[in-house]
Image (spheres, one colour):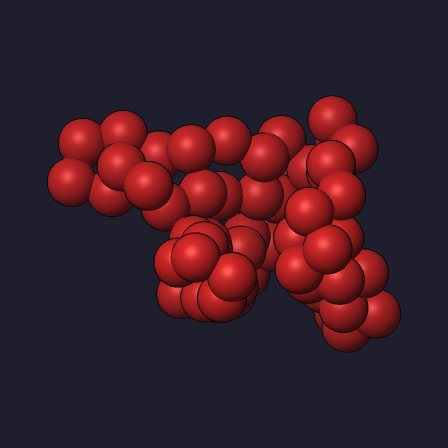
Length: 62
């Protein structure tokens, strides 16, 4: 697992830069509306949301 991939994505999210399409960044639905999911790698997920100017990482899982 290359932690620098996670660091790069977090930096882009923190600075409001768009993620490349390969990360399949999308908002979840239902009770998770407002939470976003991106695929750092096909089997490595990041769930997050933004609350005002705060980036909250809720799950990093493989």
